[in-house]
Image (spheres, rainbow, N blue to C red):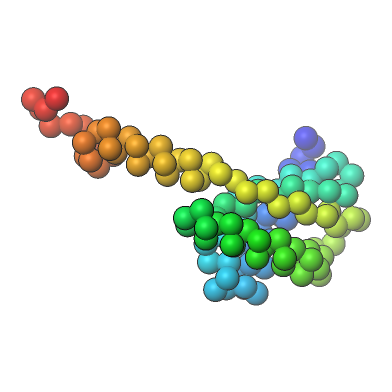
Length: 124
């Protein structure tokens, strides 16, 4: 991946997040764009989206985001100038939820001790 592509990816990630925060404050509260990857010709892009909440809320917010995709793309196009503005394909990034589940399981196995603290002497 070229340095230019990396810069474009980061710029698009920041701009999409900013559009969500400024234009759709209440609806996009639990939504974070974690990564954008554009093709070298800037025609297509994959947008990784992390959404906090239970599975029903995540599905509802993801459907909402996909409905707003055209407006978000248009706003990003007004903010930045590229030869081609990619067509964004939104994908759910499940790593945040998986990390939270893993931390919860580790806390359960560890007896509920706060993470980062060593167990008490003689315990176990």
